[in-house]
Image 1 (cartoon, rainbow, N blue to C red):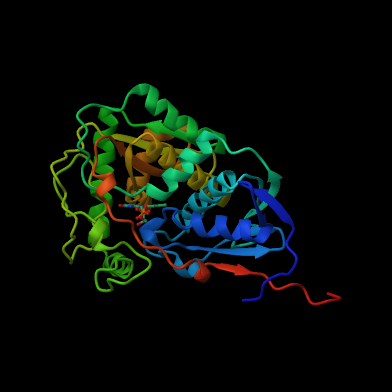
Image 2 (cartoon, helix red, strand yellow):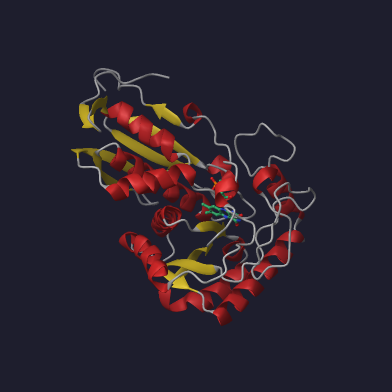
Length: 346
Ligand SMILES: Cc1cc2nc3c(=O)[nH]c(=O)nc-3n(C[C@H](O)[C@H](O)[C@H](O)COP(=O)(O)O)c2cc1C
């Protein structure tokens, strides 16, 4: 791997880090970001004083996600995670977004803007980034999330121009119907089952991607079913005594439905999940309802005033979060490259 010589110097957290070290640290730590089936469909490239984010279509789930919407949203969570790390390293950042017509895989370019004061909120979000886990067992909360807390979570999405919709109890019934319908259609698809099997590490316990059995749950009666990761295998994580009775279901929606919207939606999802973690709220993403056209149309009709549904998440209190193992990630050097300097004269 060629390293560009002579990066500029930036003061970060009282230490002097070269811009490239700063970007490398941000890119590497950000890989704790959630992604569809832990596919980690992203690539970082450090080019001079900028960090480029590309999606990696070789990791796209072609059956569940033929448009690449969830792949790009996963990259959006990574992008937001990187800004959280840069903030705690004491660096400002500007994010330049690249539209699809300009480049089919380059999504964004991050440029550090120099030192800035680290806030307590920066520290909280960074801590959340390290401890957040997708928490799939039914939540054990015995009361609903307070309305003021739900407002805080929704506010976290707003800076990305992404609307949020909280399902009321009647709508949760429709969401449950959409989830069951999506699971039924997926369950009948051999191509889907093969794809899911490829993205679980049931047969490969040392895998660095995919969803391992240690964090998947068996199918149990619950209001809104979660994805059945490997119908043919037995998940190892106990579903526990929860019943999801007081779980909050939140949808993210955008005015239009372009690649840029998917990226922003991913950033907003990341901001909400990390904010939830700072508040001790457990969470997991439910994307099957946007993967199957009929289910997606139903969810669209429920969130219509907010726009095109991009993703739904479940949020709840008193879950098993702190006991959950971390889902592995690929080593950073598989994901981050340093651009070679241009040959002289070019
Ligand atoms: C776009 C997107 C879609 C996801 N869809 C689901 C889903 O349908 N069901 C689920 O249990 N987890 C889902 N996840 C969560 C991932 O499986 C999880 O982030 C990944 O396995 C890594 O685990 P971690 O979040 O605990 O670090 C999704 C995450 C993203 C970003």
